[in-house]
Amino acid sequence: MSAMPCILETAHAVASSELPVWRARPLDGLAFYRRHSEGLLRKYLAISMEIGRVPCVLGNVAFRSRMSSYRMRSFEDQVIFVLDVERCLKQLDPISQQVVAHIALESYSIPETAALTRESLRSVARIYTVALDRLTRLFLDFRLLGAGTQKLSRVSLSNESND
Image (tube, rainbow, N blue to C red; front, top):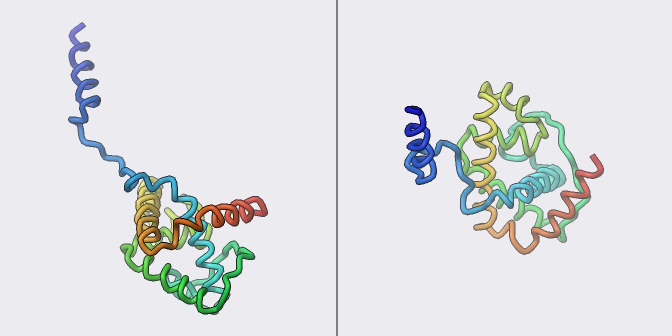
């Protein structure tokens, strides 16, 4: 019976948020846009390769990728899009850039990325979700995500069903 007050105290502390919370929270509910941000990054990879520019976070690395058949209206639109996405990617810290490049652009899994970066699985998963949320906020600020999100999600879904 003496253990019961301790359990109740802990339950009340958790309920009243007196204990620290260690899990990273999505920024302003941006977790919803993660799939759209991943689709936008795949679109960035395809367009940057199409115009002959290796994505900025990859450098001179050979990689595997998924290509889409989505076409922009003009070459200028493609260049502006690629430069805007690169500007967003460069605002991430180096480890976040590495993790996003491996997972979103090179299609590595989280365990493969953990082995490449010599980080733990949990760290890679946390870094990736936080980086994706930060990228989503930047994409929304640059108006790369928003009104065209529905069209992008349809393109992403059709690409995933073909894989």
